[in-house]
Image (cartoon, rainbow, N blue to C red; front, side, top):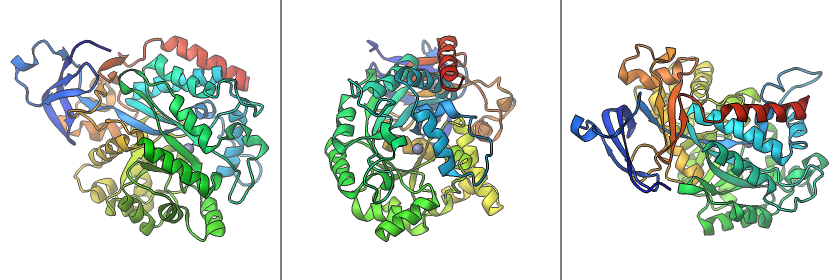
Length: 461
Ligand SMILES: [Zn+2]
């Protein structure tokens, strides 16, 4: 930990949902903001570290399965018969079943470097690869979790590890399928994993708990995890309603749709994060909002898997909170996630600037970014709410020499960040006040790339 406070001078920074000029940012020795001062005088800014471009707060990637970075681009060929989520899942399992702890570390480290270089500063790992490839327990139950923690440490990425309970292959099933053997877990085992995660410096590594889905967890086990998370103040994540088939299965098994069932059977509150609320009714989304829970929207993966379009207007009308996740990592760009979220609405509704209209601001990009930023703290149980006192000092410095930003007026910078691609580059990224990206790159990138390539060759060669 640093011994003293650090001061940064930003020509422009995103403070409380709007651009401010000549901003003096002071991070304390604990890596959290001590002071944010807009319109600072040249005297006040003197001696502060000069940042080379506009500053945005770092953003939380609220849903990740790091190992799936190893199949990005490898599931895009049609075979015979129907090609849908369930077919993709079979292919995804072929990676899940084989990846070793060393390979997972190599894949996750490259992924985390990419995410940092894009401006994500904390990632929530929805982690269910608990057992060895043969389904036997590792000597150290934390083996795979520690591979992810090492990847975070090698790159400087903040990590919220979510050991995930996965007990059965479907509603009413007695257990897992053979090809799900690595996921075997109990409420006790995931709790022990969560408690065993080594805390990182400056609060950058922590743990929450996850329930894979209603189809994978029975009511008693769900209750047990819910109670344990409540006692520990941990965030809880669950895949809730991604596929129409899981809605149909839930209706057949319980008489209720997944969100309805969850809200009436679990103590859902502001610590809960409902991943992929894609298949939902406006009434269910109102219920989510009333409960205080957040939705985690994963636009690129939901598009890649043909899930459907999230009902952003209905959720916005209910005042719902949300974050974004890159999930299967078909993109590592938060701009692409927000762009896709807006574009999917435009395509469905044949109108423009849906986010601006339903979220109540003039700029779609500003509204999307503000909402995604605000959802990050609920996803992590960490103070990751942007450039304000007490929040962790996570931020990205934009490279205004990027083609997407050339000549763009100051108050349209975020519009151009989201809606002009290829994405603008970042000059630097800081996590808890520490520089982790310089000149657009994580130090040690060549080594990370070599390790990743080697793991890929072993997995697919
Ligand atoms: Zn997922």
